[in-house]
Image 1 (cartoon, helix red, strand yellow):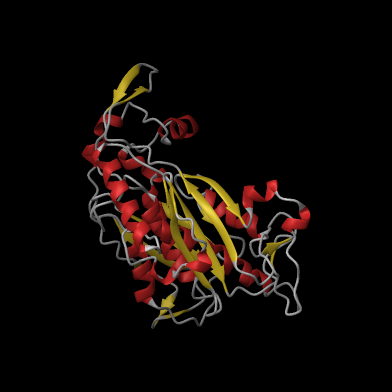
Image 2: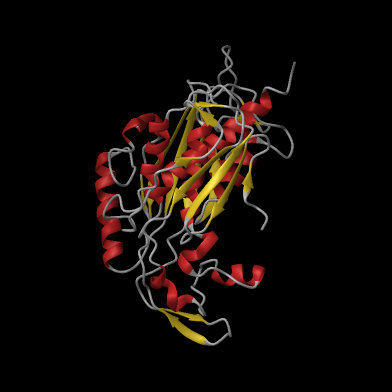
Amino acid sequence: MAGNTWGHLLKLTTFGESHGKAIGGILDHFPAGIELDFEAIQRALDRRKPGQSTITTQRKESDEVQFLSGIFEGVTTGAPIGFTIPNEDAKSKDYDHLKETFRPSHADFTYEAKFGRRDHRGGGRSSARETACRVVGGALASHILPEAVKIEAYVSAVGKMELEKEHRELDLARRYENSVRCPDADMADEMERYIKEIKKSGDTVGGIISCVVSGLPAGLGSPVFDKLHADLAKAMMSINAVKGFEFGSGFAGALMLGSQHNDIILEDGSTQTNHSGGIQGGISNGMDIHFRVAFKPVATLMKDQSSVTKEGEKTVVKGKGRHDPCVVPRAVPIVESMAALVLADHYLLNRTSTL
């Protein structure tokens, strides 16, 4: 199966299925001599793990990462870093009714069309359970970046409820103080109430995660196919349930005039505005990088839905199992981790650009 490896120089390969014995990964070309903060790595995983609040799936996983290689006495050796995360609370029987049936808007039909077979237990390899491996990879990658670099993602919308404040008006350090991961406490309370209402009705809702990268030096990226924003876009679009990505002015920029959109360069190298979102010509310009990621509603509903069997016969899919009514709160650390992998990869690549 292709498509299990991410990165140009710093490469993360993940493995495992939702209901297998474990999931895991190998992070290759990680520099030697870096002392790791294992508490920070586990903290990132804890922010993604299931069962952490009433608005997430109640699957119970400790998600304690076990490192197998590439680390000696707490310091990286330069060898591939191998790790696993055990699956401890898989309830495969919850998915027995899906052996011969395709769920609407899941990867069931397309996976079977590609491979001729599939692991129906929790979606198998296509499950969002795989993203725990990305969080480990991203937490490791963060150690490579300069200490001044901050990657801060937060929930800015749940359904039609959108946070109107810009990131400059928010204390992003507070984004993990509530279960929704929204840095505005009042809006977080409203979002949580709404998600609970949606959950009670058996339905699901989508949302938007915004992300701000500050402290990144100018010069990271490439001007053609490996543009920094292109790699960020691919990284975000590879996350389960993501349907849209925009950076800087995004689609709103298409409605502006050039005289309105251009970022005037100041004497210190900064820009008067930041419609470019911190990236120009595919290369970072030293300003904050900011982008938004749109997530669709979770496809599994606690309601009956019409579908078809593998034989093409009409059937009804009954909602069972443990699922998030809204995925965006748990996806915040995933967005941060994928951003860290992209930026660390380009940071290492950039050190080969000049002598």
